[in-house]
Amino acid sequence: MEESFNLVAQSRVNYFTPGSPVQVVRVELLQGSESKENAVCLTFKNIRETVLTALKVHFKCKGTNGEILYEDEFTYEDLNAENGVLFGMDDAVFVTQDEIASIDVSLLRAWYGRKSEDLTEYERVRLPAPKKLPKDVAASLQAQSGRKGMKYMPQVLENGWYCACGAFHSNEENTVYCSECGSDRILLQNAISGILRQEEPAQAAVANGEEPTQVVADRRSSTEQSNEGRTRVVEQTPRQRVQEPRPYQGAEPLTEEEEEAYEDPRDVLAEKLIRWVPAVTAVLCAVIAVSGFVYCKLFL
Image 1 (tube, one colour):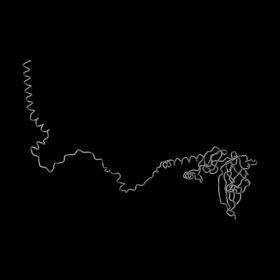
Image 2: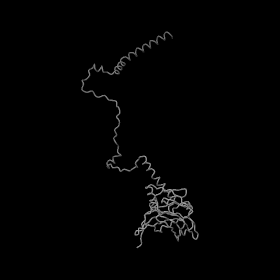
Image 3: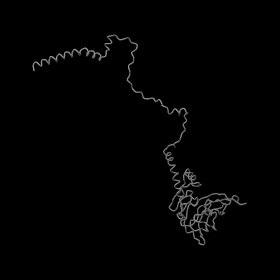
Image 4: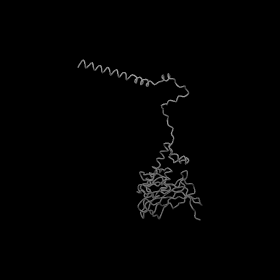
């Protein structure tokens, strides 16, 4: 019966090798379902335009205390890895049944047809860890792109760039396309910028202590809603009015003397004018006539 393997651990390498035509991409630790023996799978990438035909590497497995549990050299033969192609992940190397804490890989030699190249002269450069996207942004990006594992912020570094899937591409690759997930770097950045712009108003509202606007259903009865448009009776502030005289009630009628005492002064004045104005007018007319006669006799 053929033994199957279970994935125990998987990790991307946190370094790259400037100038090298081959890069180490990923390390996987497997365990046999029957033998419980550990096996190592290594993934590499050819970044040279020429087709890679063979690769020789050295690897060692360390335990939890840093001790070397197993080390060996392994040659990948009969390769046909073109530029940007990943390889090696289908070849498992049995190592030990002991618990493995870390695996170190060194590049030794690469063959491009009949020509070979020493890779030991290239030194490693440690990479900064890729920045993780917020969970909601990562979920939106995965939904838009249709790809799983898109949980990192695309970053352009001095010596290369990170894809949203976590893959690093050195400047030697000279590409904007991810060789692992197939994403376009520029389109990824634009997609994430659009997602972040959509979330900025909500984040600003939360930062200011505001609640998102909600549409609340009108729970009033249909009668109340239909009456809403009718004219309402609004209580206004009372204004001061000129108080009208109230009718006299419950008293005896006034006598003639009391009526004269309560007579309106304007009526008394009018009565006197009617009585005395004609007499005064007659006297004044007589005086004017006499004065005119005397003036004529004396001066004319």
